[in-house]
Length: 144
Image (cartoon, rainbow, N blue to C red; front, side):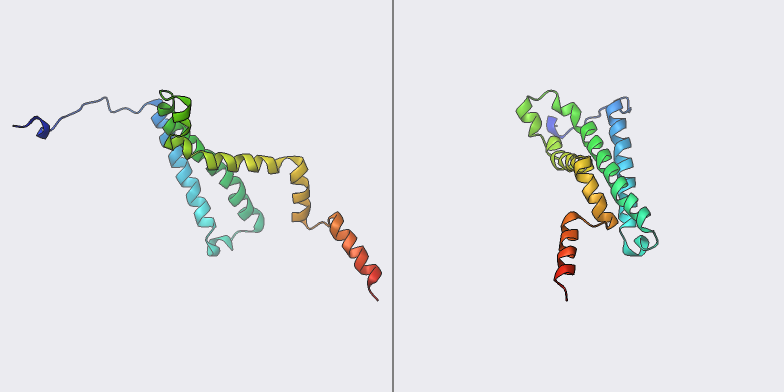
């Protein structure tokens, strides 16, 4: 009988490590919050919500979902990053999956800064900006 065709039995203690449990927990929470986001993006369901509810779910829960997904990828990939050198660790598939979500979170953080958030808040509330006030004044003075 050939040695390559034998069935091998591998016994282990069948327990997850702490990293595996955290990865599974974050993965399940990410899928649940993605499901809520997907359900509320359906037009028939979205029409049942008022604007504040829909905006809260899509913005705040969306950011939370993105953070949970980042945590899941880190929990899954971190055991494989330590044995590698820095170049291989940054080109590893699990670290490549982090670049766009982390960039998105950083850009969201930039828009939370007061120098960007105040003008955006005024625009959302419908307040006039300085440029639109100047154009309205010009229109009033030139109209007959």
